[in-house]
Length: 217
Image 1 (tube, helix red, strand yellow):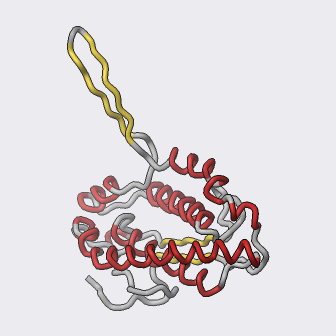
Image 2 (cartoon, one colour):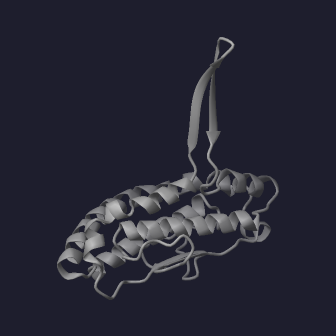
Image 3 (tube, one colour):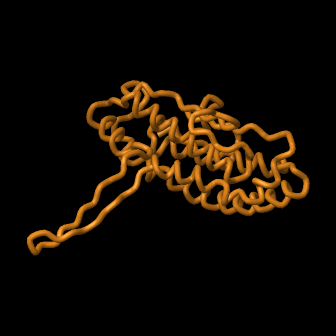
């Protein structure tokens, strides 16, 4: 495992355009409420479980089914492990769904006042390099990547707690001035970037390069 700091061209890259303009105070005030429709849309493609039970001939049966959608994790892991393949359409699905999730998150965290698009980048620019599995990925590493990333989880818990309070301060600042304080914006963007790299490494498995402990690009 490469534990050295990642170079500038890390295979997972995220940037969010700073809104150098007055943000909409009204939608900022009601952000949680106005975001409900897009959250429902996101939930509908992000997977879930449904179930039920019924009786027939005096016997009770239970049924559970997995909803379609969501980031693909187990299937790519198995193909990397046994076939050393990462189908391009699975990669594209994960990348585009992750982009959509990040646009919704940026909207919820007040980083953009444009309603999240299901397909356009808007202010969120997320890129992941498609891996050459046989050349770039160790077929056994996906089994333990989630474990190797544990130090990042602890740091990210702290960072997202700080991000939550930074967003509250930004909410008041936008209502009073129309601006998102640049220092707070850069911190929240850095937290998203850090989290994105970890997810790309540990769960989307697009790289074996260990994520840097850094908020910077």
